Length: 433
Image (cartoon, rainbow, N blue to C red; front, side):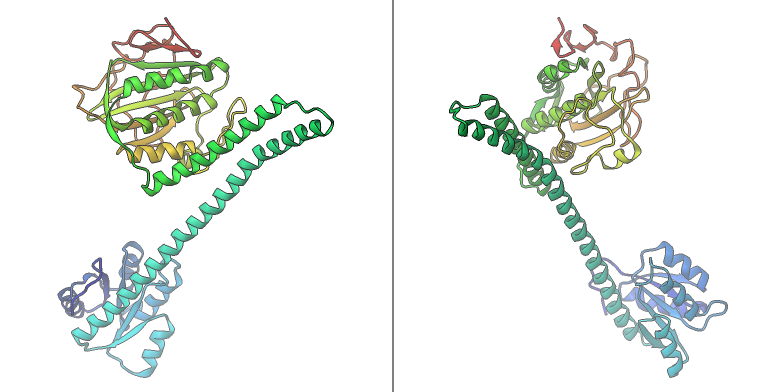
């Protein structure tokens, strides 16, 4: 019979007689199975623990460890307990059959075997095992989704309860004044109610946007965009936010233009989230630096800060939904825990990638790469002569000098007012001359 499963089932044949293994292999391979062999119980257990198997065909009468002993070991381990084992023996007495089932075997074949019967039984148990695996994996995915849903509701309830309490409190205050005869609108109360309602609306909008992006329902219109211009505009937009905390916000790039394939709105949101996060987690008087460069067929952008950095636990969950990091915003700023998840979804939607790490001199960096609209002639070199490549995810900063003095970072860039960007920089929220 031929095997029709989506993937070729892997069968482990265990027999101390080489001729017996050869006959089993020939029959099974002719039917389309992939066959592994073991000549004794020890070798069989090594393969069971190392390989992803679908069925084990196990001879009972072997020296040393018998087939019964091997089957007991397989069933004793939680990792392999559900692996189907077909027992084989030249002793077709009822006691041998019963003992085979007692130690965990799922079927029994007598020697000499018929090839078509062997293959039919192996195919049935392989298919049942695959179906069981798929069911367990589906159950695990559903459990993860259910946990995520519970987490989402819990975080949403927590994040919405605060603004609702403020709205209700100020509304009651305004009504109390009106009941006391003051018919004039309470401007402060109305402003607070409006601001809190806007915060709730922003949170719900962000959550809906993330769901759309992750489901693939949000259509990103990809076109040629200038990453240098987009970064410069983003830095300018966040100048006032940085200025409120006396944070030096700098943009460094030796290129006048760097074309990338991206969605304009998605690129703007990506940059806004990363720069806003960096400013939130950087203490007053610190520094946030944005660096752009071409690398091969990609454009790289790094946002580095002088904040507390990322813990080992943070590195593993930072791009997840509702990620609550060990570090907290330094001026009581609000965070929904969705911003970096949005960044990840946007990068994936634009065929890019995103990663993060810690700077050797302190602080964290977040970097993303997007495909170039046209290849760059050669990668830029940093001032110390090293190649300005970017690392794998969760590594140390590729720019250890980003937050160190002197401010000259990229060769060919002019440092003006503590920043470098075509002769202009951003420092403390204002544009340097």
